[in-house]
Image (cartoon, rainbow, N blue to C red; front, top):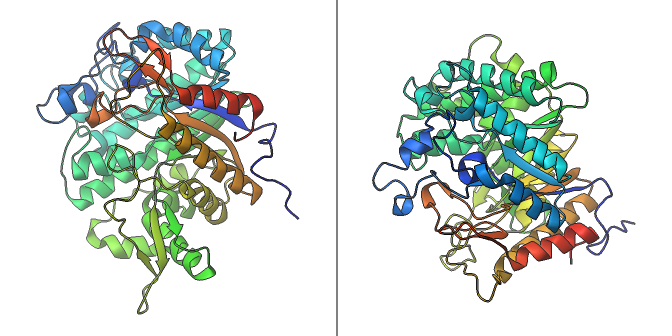
Length: 452
């Protein structure tokens, strides 16, 4: 009989943390030799980013990281997922090295160590150097070659300090949404074949990052991909609906997780895309399919799926207009997403460990009143999702950690600064930090290691 209940503590080795990304919080967009990123350029195109907001200052974490780590430590945070800004290291992508960029991250990591916080470093979180975009960006293997050099440089520089590495963040967002839909930088709308090729080049970069960690990460180094897989939640937990949701999941994730674990693109995927299939060179999948130590999952929302009718394998349901959602219009509130995403990845791909590397909710107009931000909607979101993590662990899914998105309100890409995901409020005029109610709730969860 399973005795692991919602009131049980999380396992002793379970990691609680918070997450953020360089471009979204650092600011200092052109300081100390940093090159222009595609987001530095994109945010200056009229109409692309809400209110014309730029990354120039953001939360000024570049100058305030020691203050931020002290605040993290005061809340009991012991693990922090961050990213390295590629344009700080190689301002032109693959040209001269910017030593000042490496020096900044050495100072930052030293501050984390002083505050007792373990780093989990993402090598690429969307801030492609603009100079590489002008040479084709993710449509070109030039970017793959540049990334290989960048990954080698960063792992060599920080391998003695960093032991938890994440290769790429959310391939779909910086490929399909950026080169197909055009909603994210660089805002291109290319053909399906070109978009499929960007997927492939991203997978090659993932492989190079794994290779770099294996070669230069030193003893104890671990590495994995963070993916925002399309998540299916069965309408009912019957064998028929679970099978349908699993079939939907396999189809939707064939070009990333399926390709990595299949050591090639599946016949079903290739038949579906036909002449628009990615061009693959000999040896590509030897690199892409290198074994990893864990899978990171960024989970926010999901699609409800049920058994298909008239011979169909599945039916994906459209949510009603008044279905609960955050102020981010894409963020429908489906807590079961964490359970089913992690369970399916475990059952289909047999990862040794899974980490929820992002989970959070974005709301507008969160104000400090009498020194407080009463974000009960975020507290409920967090509590409901942690209960689903608990359930997954009880059912044998190897979820070994959870990173809340985000530590602090920050630059939310095309939504600019209007959308707040942080458990710490940032006043963008004064840059004052104020922990929200959700921060104190999460602090209690981390302290007691239970869902309160």
